[in-house]
Amino acid sequence: MKKAILIIGGARSGKSRFAQELGRKLGGAVLFVATAEAGDPEMCQRIEEHRKERPAAWHTLEVTCHVGNRIKQEIGEAQVVVVDCVTLLVSNIFSQYNDQTLERIEESVLEEQVMAEISKLVECMRKIDASFVIVSNEIGLGLVPTTRVGRLYRDLLGKANQMLAQCADEVYLMVAGLPVKIKPLVEL
Image (cartoon, rainbow, N blue to C red; front, side):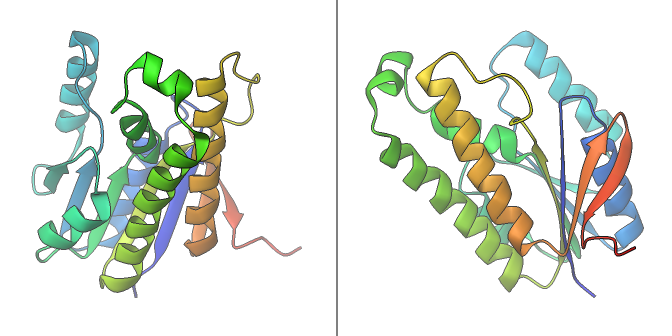
């Protein structure tokens, strides 16, 4: 039975590790979708470490945008799709612009691009007969960003996370490496 699972939490909370555990437990062939872009040597090293942590049998798709469409093209025989992560996917949309353009760009332009990207991912999740495990950061628990662009990024990632949580069958909040199930709500 296919299901959609959202894993959300802070940096280094264990999201990726838990997503990989779920990918293995759900069973079947796995398509791992990596959204990171290697912009500097340190990020290259992080990406390489993540590659080594994944099972060799998993097919990996490295894609920075148009994730929903690319998954449709690359799904093959996969029964599980792990997307790691939406945080970087939204960041990739912002990084299409230089700093000066971002400072002047209309909020509605970025919002339209982010919502279109997430809508295509949600559409893909609904149409493809596979389980999805989606990873994203919860960045709304910290201080209010000091820049307009920082606040806009936080707001749009928050909207993206809400869209994904609405369509997910299960949502987990990762805290210190521990998954806390928040959807469906636990009834006492």
